[in-house]
Length: 260
Image (cartoon, helix red, strand yellow):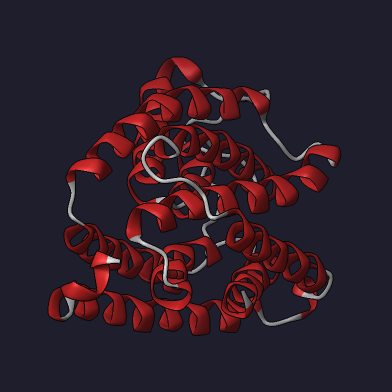
């Protein structure tokens, strides 16, 4: 339980200080830190990601920082593909899944090292809305891709959603982040329902993990605006790279440890 609380605090601190990215560490923490099986870790991760994202989304909803039409499009596209990602997950061995997960972690780290995106408004309409006739296929494709990753790996996918909302649909960063959190909640719920049929959540671990993440996110969220976000993001990105190397090497060199 102490390990679950500690890892939850680390992930929640990343959420509070950086606005996201911490959930990518949930599955490795649950597998190698807490000792869960890979299927159970993915299921538990979806619960933790959904709860944490919901907590982060609530104040942004109250502040009007969610574009509901965009969230609906991404959510509709992601629900079906989250189920599809879950089906693919069931056909993959834990070893292959973790090697692929390690590769995804490297992609996320590179994305964090690149830095924040600036809205370009490629699909922004003059009235401040979205030019759906031109960009609906792009939005559906991006939403579907994120849902698939959520179902396959148990991750939120904010590292894909936020740049897409900002660069393609032209949302300002506060709107992009708020809308992304709502989409993550929807996709996590869909993935959780699908995964729960294969591996039940270890509720004591999940609640302690999620509780630690929520408390840390709330506490660090108050100081997030007063710290050097760019530097923290770089440090956290290199931490993700280190964990990715560990996960990949363990999966390749010590696959017997994944049979529990």
